[in-house]
Amino acid sequence: MNIFLNGSQVHCLPNTTLLQFLEQQNINTSQIAVAIDDVVIFRKNWEITTLTSGCNILIIKVAQGG
Image 1: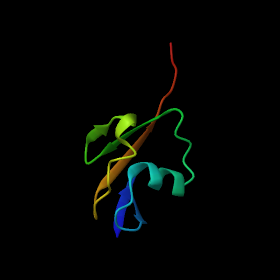
Image 2 (image 1 turned 90 degrees about the vertical axis):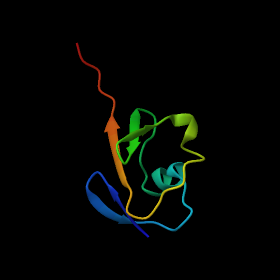
Image 3 (image 1 turned 30 degrees about the horizontal axis):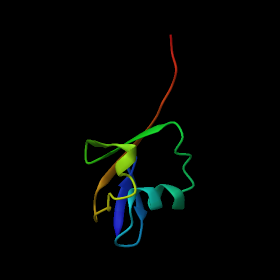
Image 4 (image 1 turned 180 degrees about the horizontal axis):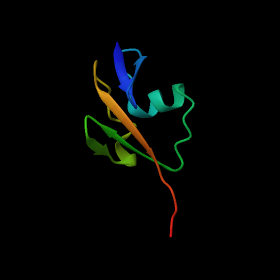
């Protein structure tokens, strides 16, 4: 199935969880926030959140400022 990651179309297998997808994409998960279809997904739910065809994943890197 096809999904969108930060605006780019990416293929993934059905029943893939958000955590599995991030690992498959080699994304460092230590300092990011993730939203699916404009809804922020809490880190504790990444393992149980299943992606759906056509969903839009937005990854935001945490930055320090001052």
